[in-house]
Each structure stands twice: as C-alpha cells, then as structure tokens.
Length: 94
Length: 286
Image (cartoon, rainbow over all chains, first blue to last red):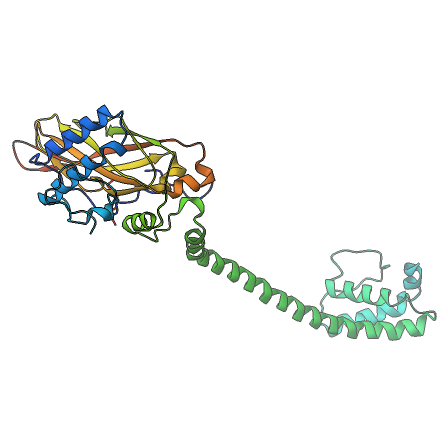
C-alpha cells in the first residue's frame, strides 16, 4: 500500500480496516436472490443508490438472518428513513 | 607606534622573559631577537605575555620603569587570564556537551511528539478515529443533515500477478449522496483447479477524499478461500461522511474510485495438502 510520511500530505493514509469487520463469505449463495434484486434495481435506476436502498436493506437483513452478519438495528446502519416494500419481520427503527 | 615603544624596553623585557621562562621550566633558550619575529621559539604563553605587555603600553606615558612594572603585572595577568580562560573554556565545554546531549534527546523525543502533533492536527492524512460510523450516522440523522451532492463511486478490481482468480466489480459504479450508506458487490471466481486463499486490500482515490470514505463492512484484510471453480460475491458496505460536502478541499471532487487488490496467500496442491506460501504483503488487521 502507499507508504510514506507526512511530507506533502496524504501519502501516509493507510487503509483502514472496516468498522464492523469482515463480511463472512456467502459460500452457499444463500442471499443470492436479494443480491440479484439489488443489482437489477441498480441497473434500472442508472446506478443510483438512493432508489435501491430498500433492496440493500433487504440484502443485509437476509445476511443477518442467515448468520452472515452481526445482527444490528437497521437504523444504526443508516437505514432509518428507508421504507420497506413488504413489512414482514422488519427490524426497523423503534 | 607600539613597536617602537616595545623596542625600547627590549633589554629589560627580554631579561624578564628569561626569568619567566625559567620559572616555567622551559628548556628552550630564548634568543635576543626583536619581538616582531614570531616562530616556534616562542610558545603561546610568551606570546600572550608579549601581547599583554605591549597592550599595556598604550595608556602610559613614561617608559622603562613603568614598562618593567607592567611586564611583571603582565606576567601575573598572564597567569590570571590563563585561569580565567581555562574556566571559560571549561564552561564552554560543559555547555556544548549539554547542547549535544540535548539535541540527541530531542531526536528521541521527536517520535512521540510528532505522533501526538499529527493526531491532534490531522496533518498528513493521519486519521483521528474518534467516533465510529454508527455514531456518525446517528449524529447526522439526529441533526437532520441533508446532502445534495451526488457522488459517483466507481469500482476497480485487481489481482496480483500469477493469481488465477477472476476478480471484477459486479457493478461499474454507484451514485450515492454523502450520508447514505450504500452496498456494492465484487465477484471473484477461482479459475484454477486448486483451492486458493487470497487476501485483499483497498484504497480510495483521490487520496484526500479517503478520509471521508468509511467502510462499514467489507471482505478485505482477511483471508478468503475459494474452492476450484467457485464463484462468489463479495459485498462492500460503505458510507461517505456528510462532512465531505462542507469541506472546501473536496469542492471539485465528484468521483471516487474504490480499488481492491487481491493477493495470493497460499495455493493448496491438489495431490497433497502442502501449502506454498508465496511472498505476499499481508495487511494488518486491527
């Protein structure tokens, strides 16, 4: 990675490990449908993330359900304003 | 003018000089030569005596008697100036040694000092990790910050040489506003016939915008093992700080490129389970 000191600035910016850690890999493709939905939505909406946030929320919820992600309140991850399409088993903001 | 005066007192002064020399256990014989002759025959002390006595000629009017007393005084003065200069040079020595040690100590102290300075001011891209992303999100949602600028985040994927993985971003780009957490995918496929373990690292360009790019969760820095022929999707969940909009340095930046590179950690042989560890820079996980 880019090494170096502070001369000239930002060369010392080292990659920071992710806040919540590593996503365990989905070897069994358990959340594939949600992923495909999300990607399809991205394509149709010209890659605008805003319009597909509900699907990304669904994907993360699927991961949590399948133990591929630490369970957490969705509002903490920035999904507080996202309305669900179907309201089955939501972990919305309380 | 002082030389003419000096020459008048030559005989007396040379006699006194001899006395002076014998008292100092000098083994050299002093030739009766005019004082303008410098050379190895005169040692420094005599020179000092010479100067001491010649300088004393200036304020005086009468010559020989005064010269005699002045020479004697000069001899004394030479001793006292000697000790004064000795103490002075000793003091100077202590002072200079102290300065040297002080400089060396400062060099050693500079390391933690510099680190605290960088953390306090954020100079050189040092990131002050004060609050987590969740806290940041909570803070911004409470304060109701509205962001308007749409930022295009493009994705790039690389694989180290000799690694038989096909690693591509599943979508070319994502348009996101700061303050909105977004999800992106990468696809990796093991094209070889042996399980390969890889580890990835990332960077964000332009570099100064990297401070605002927070990854909530990703697949980097940890070894990922793919079976032969296996294809897998790797998600990245990230968040761009709303403070990105208010920073004047980020004014012209509307494009961010997130780049991941996979390095090979080991490749397992299909015949026997011996790992070949190639020389790979494995990034540290905190």
